[in-house]
Every structure is written in structure tokens, then in C-alpha cells.
Image (tube, rainbow, N blue to C red; front, side, top):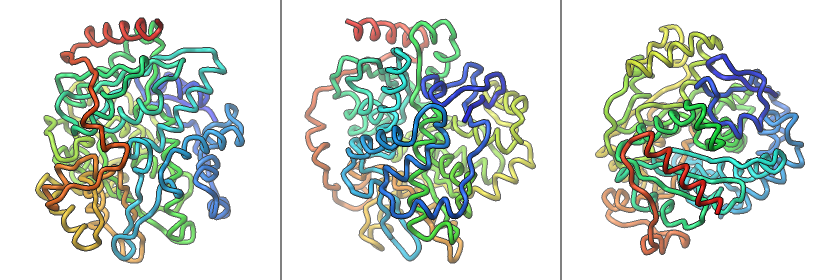
Length: 466
């Protein structure tokens, strides 16, 4: 299995190349040169396996020539041993043929743990085999940062720097990052939005001398390994409700498009998924695109679901590449035009094709609170704001006779104020979060300035080396 960039200049990379590299040198995102295919018998053979064993078999085609299946399964067992549910990603039926797929049973109580815990072991193996040290720089809208820090804190061959938008995450989300005291971890609060943070990360990757100087790497969902590690939970859930012998559908609350893209990859591999439902908050660029072919950037508005407060969905480039017939030149000019003008000119034919497969729904804060209340009153299920948006998107786009599985992406205890506003009580805190509000915090606050951030990264690497 080899990888290429969506923008065409980079080809022939193996899995560990793209794992450590993150963003392609030409500014594109890595995708497999060919898509692996599973038969119906292949899918059926995964029934009854532990989550770790199933995950290894689903991910294995993407790691060919780099990892053996026993090596990969060993890393999966280590990664998912830290989850507090024996099923790792359990399904909860909340209405007839409607399910919540709980992805928040990892150490930071958000879906990012499912991929990030595995990436920690994969990075360690790749860096040991190649005798390298890297600097991971990531942007977070709330959950990626804490999941990345939890996976990489204390690792000898990794320095990690996480940028978050100052004042635009929940208190619990921020403190999960800023209360970590390991020497290899630096948190930076940027005066700006998540999109500003993401732009700073992309600019650092585009600065070739700086990228080489600090051995830059990424664990945002621009990193292909993040997508690969998320595919298994869609497979596991689909098998649980009857696939491959019946179609299923998935609903996913999304901002950066990586989580729902992993579901699309499962379908591309042969899993019978009828359609996908995207849930947006008031930052609804993806919903506007699906409904009206309006991929235009608007100001980011703070919401009850801060992990989705995004206007530039980086992973959409991977889907666009596929629906443009893998025309890397057209993909490159489309993305460059989007960067320059804030509006993406997607050909009508490609937009129609995407729209037949993807449905979308938008909820503002008042509608989100109402949905949290509706779900609780009908099923006694407590959904965090992100999960509630996903559940609502799925319920509004369900086909008769087809199970609808909504991704429950975060534990409600991470958003206690929103839950209290909707339900009149605060959710129980898991043991690991009970003292989070008392722990001291450590982070730097910087203006949205590339030079300042790069200097902070250099200083952190020097301090970490000592």
C-alpha cells in the first residue's frame, strides 16, 4: 500500500512516511493510491472478534509493507486496554432502529482517543525503527488536543505543541490539556478561532526550512493514520446491526470532516452503507454545501458544541479529490481558489454526486438544547451537545427499514453547563474528571502570529531536550 497527495506532486509514500509526515509537502493530504476491497465473506469473518482484533484486520491493508498483522494487533490491544468499556465503542439503542455509537470511553472521554491511543504506539514504533525525533504540532477545537497530549505525553522521541483558541473551548476541555505537566508538552492559547490555529499549523508545514529544522509532524485529522484508525468502529457497529447482509446508515456531528470521512472509507472498502448524515451547529459550512453547493467561509461563531466551531473543514479535500475523479490538478486549483477567495467552486456534477450520498442538518444552540431534552425524555439517554446534533441529523434523515447509527463523540460530563441548561441537572463526572477543575494550569497565550508561534516551538524543543 502506497500513498499520494491529493495535489499530485507527491507519490509512492508508505504508511510510516505519511504517519510521520502528516501533511504532504505540496500542501495536499495523503490518500491511498488504491482502495482495499473487502468481500461480504471478509466482513462476516470479523464478527465475534474483539475490538482490537477487528481493528487490526480492518487497518492492516493500509499498513502493508510496514507492519505485520501480529505487530498491528499488539498495538491495538495496548491502545484499547485503556478504555473503560469492554466493547470499546458500544452501541446503545435510543429508539427503534436508532443507535448511539459511544466513542467516548477512552482516557479523555472523546472520540479522538480511539485513533490517538493507537497513534501513540505507531509513532513510537516508527521513530524507534527510524531512530528519529519529531515535533508534533496540532490545532484543536476542543478534544483533539487533550487526546493527543494523553497519547504522547512523556514519550522520549516526541515533543508536542497544541494550539487552542483562547476562550473557545469548554473549561473541562481546556483543563484536560493545560493541567498536564510532562516536559515534552506545550500548550499555546491563540487569540483567535480554531481556523486561525489550523492556519498556523498549515503555515508551519508550508515553511519548508522550519518544517525540516524541527522535524515537524501532525496528529490532526490531516494525518491519514487518524482516518485509518477510525474506520474500525464503523465496521464494528455495522456488523452489530446486521451488515453486510443489510444496509446501515451513519450520522456524524462534524466540523473538520475527518470522522465522517472514515465512515465513507468503510463504504469505499465495500461495507454496505446507505448514506451519511452530517450534523452541523451554527457554523454550518458543510450543511450549506450539501444543501446549496455553498462552500463559503463565514465568521466562526462560538456555540454549545465548540469542537464543531470550524469553517474550513480540512478533510473535505480528500472527498473532493475522489469526487473529482482523482484529478489532482483540478483538486489543487480548487483548493487554492478556496484559500484565496473563501469560496470553493465545486463542479455541479461532483456536488450532485456528493449530495446523493451525504445528507445534512443544522442546529443552533436553542435547537441543540431542545434536542438534548427530547433525547433524554424519550430514552433517558444523556447526549452531549455534539452527539445530540448527530442524533438529530440521523433521525431527520433515516430511511425506513435501515438502522441509523449516530456517533456519540463526547462524554456529557465534558459539557456540564450545556447539559444543566437543557435538563436542569449536571451530569455525573467520571472519576478522572472529578478533580480536573482544581488542578493548576500551564499554557502560553500568544497573538495569532506565525513568527511568535514558531519561536515558541523552537524554545519548547530546546527546553525538552534538556
